[in-house]
Amino acid sequence: MCSSASAPKAIVELQVPFHDLDPMQIVWHGNYLKYFEHARQKLFDNSGIDLYRVAKEQGYIFPIVKTSVKYIKPLRFRDRISVSAQLKESRRMIVLEFTITRLSDGQVCARATSEQLAVRASDQRLLFNIPDKIRNALMGISS
Image (cartoon, rainbow, N blue to C red; front, side):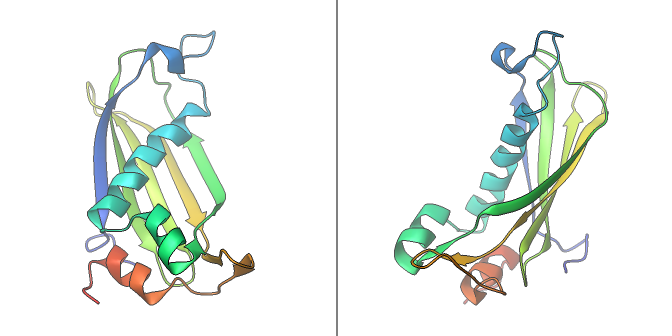
């Protein structure tokens, strides 16, 4: 587990596009996952991890096996938002916590967590630990 103060974190700012809205003129719930993915990608990029390259060169994939979202306030067209991804666990699985905050008023609009496991791609065998090289990169430790 990572302490909140030292846990790696990434933040992206986005603006809600019209095509993400549902007929009620709020962001369709499934699009929140796309916003979380932008922050997840930045966290991995900041750690020097290219999951496509890891799969190709090291033979590991990291499927998301669980996501939980708490929708707090709706997002609307052109809302400017901050999406953060913070690492909470990287030993047995990669657990990230996400927060979406509306920039105009500081309102937290959603919170979420996701879990990713390590799988050996060649035989789809589940690994019971995140490979050291990946864990160390996420934690900012030189290998």
